[in-house]
Image (cartoon, rainbow, N blue to C red; front, side):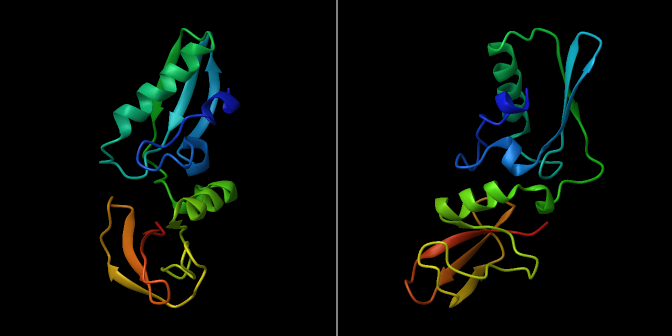
Length: 145
């Protein structure tokens, strides 16, 4: 089932999957019901209902009929749960992956370390807007949460 769920793209960043993002916390069985535990990136995430629908659709396409989705808010999601593969996909997509230091170490477009923050707020609440001073391209940085 993990392989099936690994095909579902994140609705806001389609270059990574829900499993890359680390929001699918557990998959198991309660009798004959498949139980999937999901922790949204933050409690008010507007994509939560779409994510749940995509999970159910993927499982039903593989013949599962009894499905329960559990929303788990504690512990809260953290960027530490993102896979290394997901971080690499983000960078290839043009989004700097989260860094423990609180900012990108390089531009995802040209790999220059000469970058500056334009705004703490980006296209979604989990991203900030940065710019490379060498290639002059703006880019999103996935905030470390």
